[in-house]
Length: 397
Image (cartoon, rainbow, N blue to C red):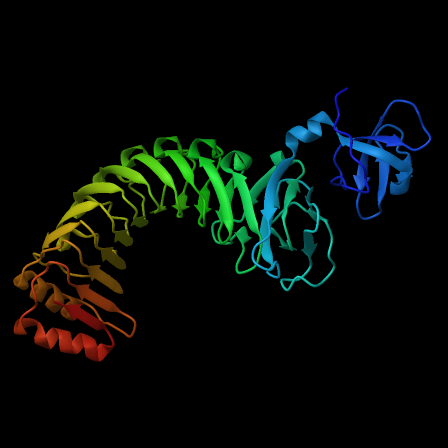
């Protein structure tokens, strides 16, 4: 039996997982047991004999337990005074433990009830607050095969700001999780092919470096939001049709014709050095939010944008070259055309006149038509004056 024996004085085992223990003054074979951190005691699995912690000379994780433990690193940042928040959901009760000088707290200020272990009860996202004053310690999750999510679609699973700890791990550590939402101080790295086949939400931003071809993301994925120093590759035609939201930045080199985006897509942000191309008239009609910057080369007529679009931001190498008129049924509260766009003065005037005639504007709405576009003429003076009176900001060359 090859076990890594530990002393309780130096490291506390995680609760409610199988261990081997050696009892003081007993020279027989090790006994299998589980630990309860609240009561500081061990209970043997076979006869349910209870031993206080002081009676145990050494302990070691059982082989099956080690296979199910997930260990992330928690690295102190700044002066260590900041508090990170982690939200976890599991399919059955599990435990989390932080080693060394790291502590969990009951409150977001990091002052109440410091402990090294907390129970994650099943049924919903559970919130925990933690501090790491100095150095790097381990964040251990028991029964990681029961972990369903670090965060959800709308609730961030890891938030860490100034002087709060940094979460370090790999996508392989998240390979069975259905929902991942990690922001702030984190270094989650690895190949996206290691994402769970049942993952629906992937949202990771920070100092992370994700790699791999987007053809390997699971068909279950609904949202992909990855920023940082990511280096994803591939063609957008290989993205799953289940996606409704895409935000990919960093140093990615994704390419493809926008006509091949998923039909149900609502939200699209492409940055970095991606080289997506195609006529905007061929974007899915379900799109309501579009940002395209960087090396992408979208082209076409502004009139080809989907009828339900509410936000447009097109800059960089994109070449939007004309406007031939349309009836606007939905107001794009942000409408920004810049970069290599080269709409002529007639197109600029017609667009502004249609915006004024079809829509009611308000404070906070911004219309920008710059880049290589021609200046507007006096033909649109009345339209621009009216939109400004309604609260909009209008910027042209």
